[in-house]
Image 1 (cartoon, rainbow, N blue to C red):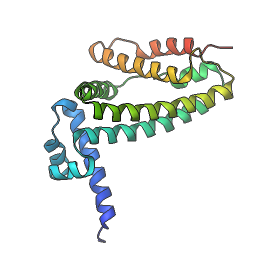
Image 2: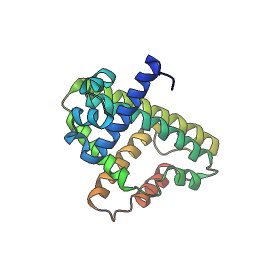
Image 3: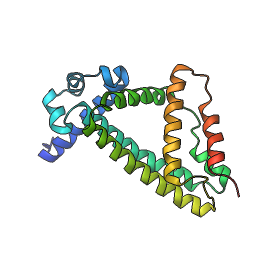
Length: 196
């Protein structure tokens, strides 16, 4: 069996730590998870976590960045299938919010609460969020132009509004599983992206 190069070893360690962090965060939540638990799950020492990510918050941000990239690709693909306003609304409406989505929303709320009082970390999160929102707005703009749709609000505001609504609905669903988040989002989208 061929030995891994140093770069390959670092990449493997990086990926194993990310996978372990996802697993432990999903089981215990952000606040209850420790760096030692993540390191043990991955089969490394806590020093590896600090070396690769700077700590638990860095791991969280790396997971969010990877998810943001995947989300953007899926969104663009879904919107490319839309041929009219109802199609755009369908593409943007979650068909279901699964239990893992609800759990992730609760973990995200824990993370925001944990770092809100730390200006440097909060600024890093805001910068990453704004980059992702700008990318989403650009994708939406391209598809709205293609479909001849004019949103009721500037697209950057639409993206913030939809993110806030989805986040709030995910937390609400965590307490009340009967909330029909998809119907609420579809109604909001129909107002934000009017026909004609």
